[in-house]
Length: 261
Image (tube, rainbow, N blue to C red; front, side, top):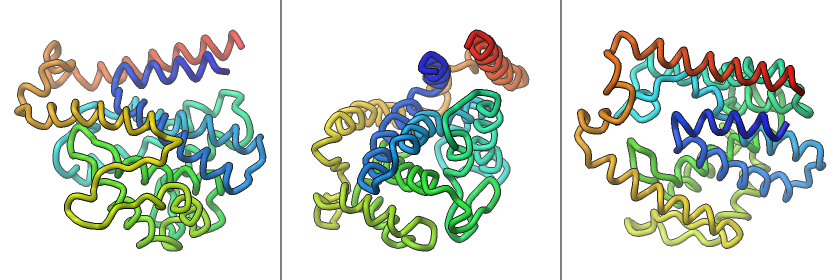
């Protein structure tokens, strides 16, 4: 099982290093919250694996969309929103513990039914998925991305508080704020720095490192930013086939590992 997870992580890292770093930090946050909420060890294990692979489905999304500067079109966002279902479809044949695949499928569902892919509401969403959803939002807002700088802990906490009980589970948000909100700086222009708690010090180091990389990429013009991707080797009409080929290779490797297991 660990070998299979490592293969999946390596496949994701080859296409999008940001996603792998994001998944690792989300795993730390989600497991901290779940432990504080007293989840049993078997449920914690399922959550840990789900958090580690929750963005696996993004292997089916063109890298141009994952790092696109500016707002996605309606069609582009609809494609991005398929990633929980894609991950679920990939993992369904694998013998994962508990509700691991279902947690991944539901991690973008929201209490009021405004989430995706199935618009689940309230208690129809697994608790582990509700925990993963909050951890995902916190980490994403506090981290740099190729298309934007980090928004910071102040704005992330503001988002969770504003939508507590609407989008996010109130109990999960309460525990999250107890763990990560106590060192919140004053809400001014200089306070949007990422401030992880002491136990997640490595997270801060990773954010600092990826932040420098992100800023460098933001300064590059569009043409230069694309020269190190497949765009450099293949014309536009062939790139989709290259993405499909990568996805097929992942499926082949997983099939070989599953048969071996």
